[in-house]
Amino acid sequence: MRMMKKTIEKILDLIESTQRILITSHRDPDGDSIGSQLALDGFLRSLAKTTRIVNQGCLPLRYVFLDPQKRIENFNSVPKEKNFNFKPGVVFVLECPSLDRLGEVKKIVPAESRLINIDHHPDNEMFGTLNYVDPKAPAVGEMIYSLLKEYGFAISPMMANQIYAAILTDTGRFGYSNASARCLSNCAELIRLGADPKILTEKIYFNHSLAFLRLLGTILQRLEVKNGGKTCSVTIDRNLLSEFGVNNKEIEGIVDYSLFLGGVEIGLLFTETEKGKTKVSLRSHNAFDVSKLAKIFGGGGHKNAAGCTLNYDLAKAKKVIFDQILKFS
Ligand code: 5GP
Ligand code: MN
Image (cartoon, rainbow, N blue to C red):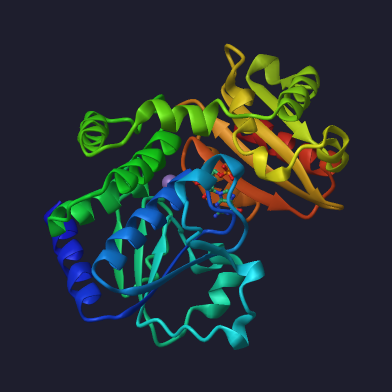
């Protein structure tokens, strides 16, 4: 704990001595990475720093409201590396276990800049000049909150919402084992600072399109149960989204349905992202460590939530993953 406090102090010193700051996170940002980056950005800008936030991939629709000023730029739409004329003295890398997980953004991180690595993945590669890594933190959002508290910063209601959203989504609405007493008391503080749980829940979870719900109906009809009811998987093939007219920015969260069936220990979502390529999202209840499974296939994550991408079509991807699960069981 004292070590972390020291690291936070060093981070604040580094911020003080730097004007231009780049903030980034893993490719295809999620609720924690989005909320954390935006709150940090608000803090740095209020210190009159010049900042940019660049991620590879666009925001899932459910999180767009957290970024009313459109601060997060998608790497695919910013000028390509050679023209990226923003030379940061410091780069914050949030919620990202390795530089490879930045995807294309890695190309615009100058070799000479100092990296501040803030993460809660247990397999973080400690690539930073400063590494503030706490696998016990439920979300990076909570770590950003600690940083702002240490500074004594007056957190705005918008920033409280951004941090609360990061924690809300990474704890599965306070339903996972990482929803500790400390986490909930931090969230109580955030509510006092202006976070609005009702609006956040409505915008993030109860805001789907009719097309999405129809798609979900079909996905659930096709749900597959294996291993005597211990494994359950859902599948999105390439044509399904266009068939239902659903934007792929709306499908984040479908993997959760793989754990809805009583008795299931491992839940999976297979998404055919392009021909011959399948993204696998893995979830589990406490006992089974899905990050070990994801790592075998070049991915990673946490014990109960992990992912990987296979260069196989859906059928082959399912076969290799299910074969591996049998070996583990
Ligand atoms: P999701 O299934 O929601 O995409 O990801 C769940 C967790 O697994 C997140 O913590 C995410 O960072 C991690 N994850 C997902 N895909 C990959 C991957 O390809 N590589 C690594 N290292 N981690 C992943
Ligand atoms: Mn996270």
